[in-house]
Image (spheres, protein in one colour):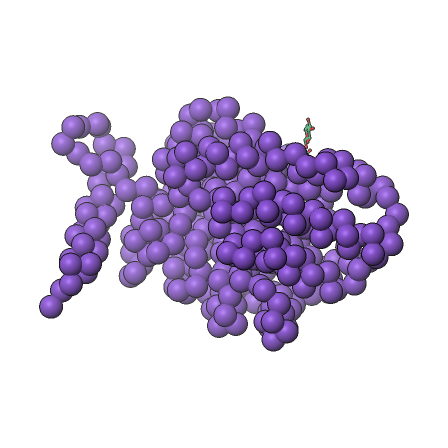
Length: 353
Ligand code: G3I
């Protein structure tokens, strides 16, 4: 016999399927439900579908309105990084991060904290100083403690350590590694846990979506951290893909092996760039890849959600960093759907929950 809870769940699933089937661009009618959003569809599988946002983009109301209605999660693109949060030693500024958290919570989006420890976007006072190991350890502990405490109860996850490995699986020679040695990663995780016992603590990197030397290094590190009782809850795969570099090797198998270690996995910064100008064939290939990434996440229970690194080609980090490349997102500059949008939607609709 069906319990009331099951009946409610079944009714909700039926409603969501009806919503999913509704065409996305139908003329408004008082009798018609709005079409299911990507996040509605992801929720049917117990996942979220999100997009990062940078503070200046909130002022673009067409963009921020769609962010607030289509997505269930966001990540500040820059607002919680070290140069923003501790511009002078011991002087904290949470304005930019708070602006995004307040916006997100007003719209019902949950927030991923990004990031506590990264070799990039560090303040000058930190990079230009010379520090003993004890000094740098104290600086790192203070930074993590203050930023995590400020955001306690406001973010569901933190990218604690970002991009700490090289492509060959050796540690990146960052100021932290060079001064503190590899133990800084476990310390950072422990300090973050002490500051917020409930937030999910992630390691996060790019070029780790498929099997390879770099993802192997994270696999070994997370296995070791787990064995030592260090609090690590998740592995973030940024997924900054490029058509010209090929699709990563066995994404699903890679996600599964991390899940089997006992950690959550999240696709944290998905975009798929190409050499411009984009033609129909490339946009179709891009759509196929977006669908494949979505399906790979849905195939593994512990893959908790997908975040785009911005959702439209009008707000993307790609063209300034890779001149001549772009068209990386599922929405175009005019907030129109590209084939990639339909491919994500199809993957979310086709997968069995
Ligand atoms: O803060 C200055 C501002 O004072 C100045 O007026 C402005 C003029 O251009 O530049 C501002 O700094 C820029 C900053 O974003 C904030 O807008 C930097 O030049 C720019 O390089 C920086 O880019 C960010 C990049 O990280 C830095 O590495 C991107 O917006 C951000 O999307 C990108 O995000 C990273 C993730 O954190 C980690 N994974 C890779 C991803 C893409 O690079």
